[in-house]
Image (cartoon, rainbow, N blue to C red):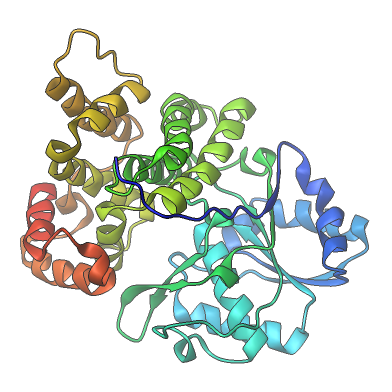
Length: 382
């Protein structure tokens, strides 16, 4: 086990059923009398915006709504939302939605505060220090963006996934209310849940893993393995939804403290090409990343199988480690997720460009892996 340096920061978070009704507590912390609620049309059509705005009315806080968020947070959408925020000058931004909505809100907290476009800050070494306060209310259980300092975006200038990073991107507060997730469709439940699981697995088997990160990661892996199938088959299972909420937030804490992995470096380039969800890309690529990493960390992968519910008694260490890969594949298959890149429209001719894009996105974080490793994984996943 390595002994890396790490940090922990967890935003003030209200977790539990019905906590959306406590929004006034958070608004009072920021002396907020006006808010811009940032969301998407799916969340609005599901009736969740009305539920949240009812709480705002009760709190005596005025609000407007931007419901134009799109999957993978495209740059043009961020610029549109920025324009509305600059015009209205709200006291606080409210992110109501999944990872793309939250990442859009994080970006807008910077661009609107400084009256700039996304193109003015993306790719820069550091972000402007001025930001708008932001409260995050996730409506999916997977990305854990409510506890992260990252915003993953789609730069439409070159079609590539890019990231904003900075401590100022941490939400100022969050409400994690499983009641807001009871109507989440099975497909979204599966896609986001697999993201949380992969956060746990990659942090747990990272070369920078350590006891603190492992506490978060082990909890994530056990909770998702036991509760994602339940939430997928019965969306009204409040206990399963509650446990998945905890897994999602803990998954990001595991990644932040223990480190990420190769699957999350690769999947963005697959998303850009195939136009699929984050979780759908991870379901395809993660087993092959696990197989690449397994020989160098066989004991951890054996323990991983047990955490996922595999009975490893009587198995050799190698057999138990390999069982973790099969358990991941089986879970994704049971959730109706595609298993191959060719199933989402990617051909062998696409792989060199995808590998090149991965290398550009990952930069020095790719080490100790090489471009050949990326191509090997992509070919195995084809």
